[in-house]
Each structure stands twice: as structure tokens, then as C-alpha cells.
Image 1 (cartoon, rainbow, N blue to C red):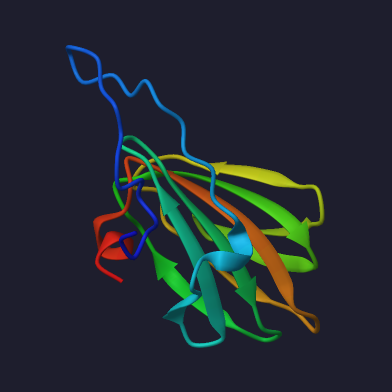
Image 2 (cartoon, rainbow, N blue to C red; image 1 turned 180 degrees about the vertical axis):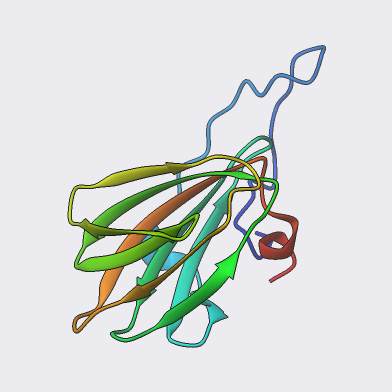
Length: 129
């Protein structure tokens, strides 16, 4: 399988629709370093990419923007998310939707944080990891 665990064989109907599903075991996906203090396991489809993140305490993500819509789900811990200069403390069970091209960044606090990020369309820079 490729680095993002894209299915090696997808059956398609006429018109390009996927007609066969693929199941992945997260533990079998090799973690990739995307930022200092942050590892991710990546799975990509044609229209979306899922990033399963493990972030160390006191990790800073500088303010940035990208053309991808981002849905962030906090699975464990807490993260302070900065969106257009406003701060939000996200905790386990919180979900934030970040529209395309919005300025955002974040930092973890005193404990590790686990997050699931969903990007649409898939992030090209992550596809190259």
C-alpha cells in the first residue's frame, strides 16, 4: 500500500464511482511527523483526507491558512485554537469547522492531545509525506 494507505485496488463503475470499500487498521499505519511534537496517521480518499494526530504538550502550531475545509475533532486532551485572532479552548468531544482559507493556529497545554482532522479536498502537502 502507498504511504497514505490508499487502496491498491479500487473497482469503479463507469463515471469513476468507487464501488468497493477498503478497511484499514489504524495501528498498521506508519505515523508521520508533520510538525515538531506532532505525529499523524493518514488515510486519504478521492475527496477527503483524515489525519489522526497525537500532539505532545506545549506544541505550537503557528497561524496559517490553506484552501482546504478542515473539521477538527478533539478525541483526548485540550488544545487552544486561534481563529482570526480569537482564542477557543477545545476539549475532548469538541468539534470545530474551519472554512477554507481562514487564518488559524493552535497550541496544546500541559497534557498530550489526540485529534482527528478531516480535510476536503485532501491536502497535497500531506499526500507527499
